[in-house]
Image (cartoon, rainbow, N blue to C red; front, side):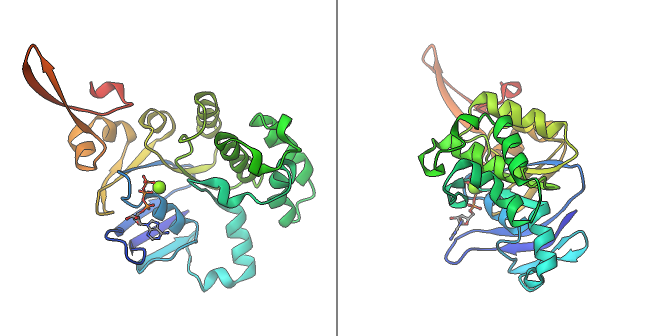
Length: 261
Ligand SMILES: Nc1ncnc2c1ncn2[C@@H]1O[C@H](COP(=O)(O)OP(=O)(O)OP(=O)(O)O)[C@@H](O)[C@H]1O
Ligand SMILES: [Mg+2]
């Protein structure tokens, strides 16, 4: 579905960036991206969504090259933007309509879909946003904004859903709903997260990025989560110091993931 071949990307003035990333996402994959703060997870998702373009290496969407030039082709861009969507880590950036209802219906309307209203009603109901339908999006709480941004994306019925830390502001019930909805759908999902429990429930595959933006691991989620040395190398496990009866004792500990204890 989407393919990165030896992709490197560094933002201007950044000390690190993505380094030589080769990755194929197949239809139906539920891929979890793990990695420490600043290792390049959001950058990787922006590359997959055609918002930034590699310094080196290539990207392809269903075999067609995904470049700035190719996205100037209106038909290609329109199809790509409907089928591949990104939930930003800070979704305020994508909300600008006068009401929640208009916000959800906006994408389907832009695409000329005849049932934009019905889609807005359906996804507002799924995400518990019905009481907020007439409110301006900027008055919503952080988590409500994230739910709204998610409703906007799901209303497009995308094939590839890119989610950047969706559980950061969502309450546990909504995270549970999201995991259930995605696990049982045909949709291809790539999700970056620090929530290892969600990773284990949602993902069937996991990519762990190292601190220099390189791929350290690509394989089954449970294998990644049980590899404490891998998680430590990626900066995801923490060395705790405890004193038991005056004797200092150090052990590696992965917060939010019980099997490592
Ligand atoms: N818009 C930007 N302009 C300049 N540098 C950026 C920009 N966005 C990210 N960077 C830099 O690129 C690197 C990768 O950042 P990125 O946001 O992809 O990390 P991340 O893995 O998503 O981190 P986090 O877990 O904190 O969300 C970092 O060094 C960051 O400082
Ligand atoms: Mg990020």
